[in-house]
Image 1 (cartoon, rainbow, N blue to C red):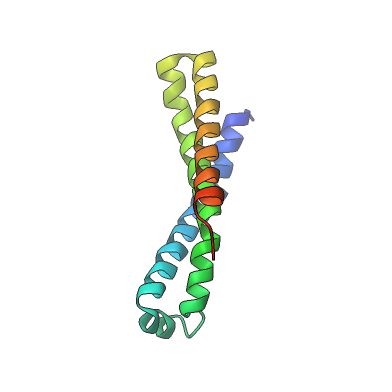
Image 2 (cartoon, one colour):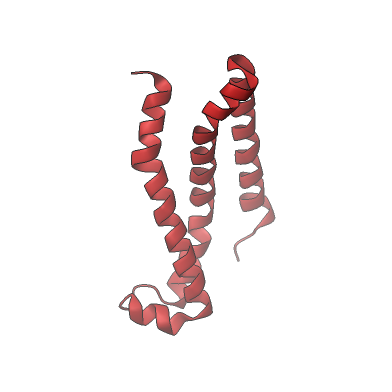
Length: 114
């Protein structure tokens, strides 16, 4: 089995569903910060205002990193087709590194959790 087909399978089985679940939790916790009573009742008091705030702050970085990995994995074939094999691989790796550095900078340096 080639490496890309293995990575694509891991993306389809693990990364994409995990990203979707984290996105749903991020939206639910964000809504719980705005309207805590409704979300608290519908989640049987598991996600109140305080838990939603903590969850919303913690989920951000893993969600961004998984989303970047998912996008890089799925744009690789198009880059290889447009730019050629060697340049496409280099551009794909560079885009992944730049996006992860931007996400880390925005999450760890710019946004401070009180």
